[in-house]
Length: 192
Image (cartoon, rainbow, N blue to C red; front, side):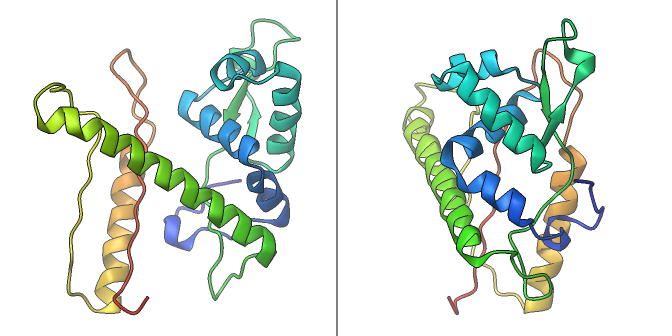
């Protein structure tokens, strides 16, 4: 997958192969872990996900066939060592101009993404109690909400600007202080 350079809102729709890969909850979890870590081996993922390495090797190959990850031979210890990294490029579940390749798979992937967002919100809510009481003074998350009165055109402009900002912060140089931050944006008009 290559980055289209046109922002997340204009990214190409996921192929059926990508949808099949991401419809599986464990595979989506593996993909998220590889993305978070930037580089991962099946053995590393086995420890983090409490799954057999051979099971994860299978799922890593499926993700690679779908173009979601690729090998990183420069990170391998030897010729037998398989290290994986996420591919770059945004993807969309679909739009009226570029509909989802398979509606049933698209719905399954969307349900998985909703579960992932719910999990993120739960983690932030669980941490927030200790932050607002001063028990934990370290900034580990944020929950912000805003209600805006905008035309559709201004809303689309806002989303495009947010895409640009997020893209500009992607892949900061890695050092000991670098953490992986998950950011989910949800917006909806009063019509839905």
